[in-house]
Amino acid sequence: MTRETKSVQRLFVDQPLAADKTLTLTGNPAHYLRNVLRANADDAVLLFNGRDGEWQAHITAIDKRAVTLVTAHRTRPQTPKADQADIWLLVAPVKRARLDYLAQKATEMGVTRLVPVITRRTQGGTVNLDRLRANAQEAAEQCGILQLPEITDPARLDDALQDWDGARRLLFCDETAEAGMGVSELAAKLRPPLAVLIGPEGGFTPEEKQELLALNQTVRISLGPRILRTDTAVVAALALVQWLAGDWRGGSTDAR
Image (cartoon, rainbow, N blue to C red; front, side, top):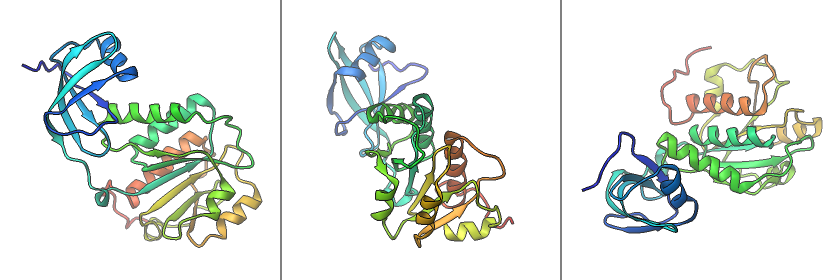
């Protein structure tokens, strides 16, 4: 009989999931279950892969190299893509610890794609994509999220704009913009698919701003009278977007 603890661990697996399927985990997932959680045979685990929903499984065997599990039943179906707000985040990289935080919060806030963009004033250094993906995965595991964001290779801002999808609105967060747009007016301009662009802490250069504003898809906004750090601006902008145009569906857009 499966033994369920007070809090059943959720674990991302990059394998297909279905009923009565046997999975063998090695490497970091096996290490985490065996050495961090001190899991035992018959312990229950919730598994998800971003495609097949969430499944309850139980551990059937643990050894020094692998953990074997068998799925029982699906606990939650995968959310259809049509019911998800398609929101990308383009952000200039920051230092490592804050980039970790940024990846976690972007995942929690429902971002579908995370794109590190290199601007003229970017000072974040090398982007460790494996570390970003690990932080996104950890956030999804802890927060009950079924979908992990796609995390792409870093791109130069110029290149990203040159190949921009004409159907996707680009919300350009500019600290020099006037906060004159009402909520209803902004909501009318924001319809998924969307992308949120957060620049470096040194700001965009005048040339970059000119290039951004030349796009017909650009919506330029201010995040208020305070200068925000990049990771704070990400959370503020994504909260605004999810409230006005995303899948929160809880806010009225009648306020001025």
